[in-house]
Image (cartoon, rainbow, N blue to C red; front, side):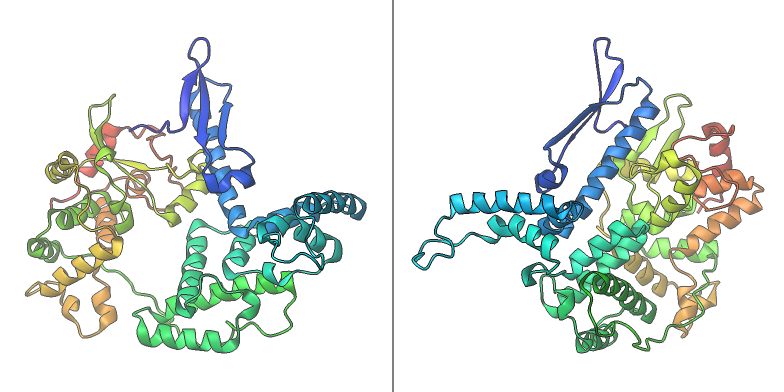
Length: 449
């Protein structure tokens, strides 16, 4: 697998790695350049990758700044300057506007065009920095408030994703592109709550989380724009069940029946992949044909799996070099997984369904059709009991099967991607003496499905 994206060997002796990244067009103003090209000053690929990942992280921060809008970016820059300097810059900007639009504001302007909002944005930012009065047209939108809050508070990728989902759903419900935070009233939130409860299949826990996230964003905007009224997203009395679903391990015969019912090969492969690697549904879906390859040193076939947000957050704490979007864990391919996995690789077609929800629903449909299950809770009238046997339950099977096979916890945790204290999760490598041969031996101790 090639992990040298954006890296090129250059120099007189082709012994120095260079980073070359094209800056997306919409980030040119924020980054103040169209292309990033710099020497890592090293021939060490590990060090070069670390520097490359820092550049990618910088581009990500530019994305967040761009979401704030040009007015906010300019205002932030101007607020760092003293008033004397600001007045000097304001005079220069005003002179440029007068040169381009000498008729602007004159009684005899007639049909001559006014400066556009884009022409006036720098003058408006200067005026705000000098007077402290925010023009109405620049008041924070919900998306801008979210992005600015991210700038000043450290959130995990999973939390940011939850914020964005809540904002997107709220704006979609209001049928607006991006509502001004100051315009949000209590009745908007009340109607949104009723809509989510009556018109969607979202659990109360998810609805409650949306309101918490929207409340956090609203509180940030209040601190910036000084609203005097109460947070419209607070105190809605959304009841959340305290006890969480406790997943149970599948009986292997029941899981075999589920697979027999499935018609699509990739539906079955998704189950096999989870059974032999312990991967979560989203992690299974991350596997591409090119992620199945033969290790050059050991000749062992392996599959590269991208960890989900929770796992990535954990490994970042243990291994700072893994803090990048390319971190993936490498798992040797179980003997029984080789045939379906190679068929998937050679077809080069990819997954039949394009989302984790699609596979979750397909799995659920097949589960409901099995006859005479060993685990009777599968057919229980209690929805919570039925949820105890789900796709995610397969992960519990793998952990249990490794334990029964007496595989060392440090090895099984690394293979499955468990956040187990003491397991050094160096993705892409098997450090501390755990080589592919030993890892394959552990994987092949898993029972054949």
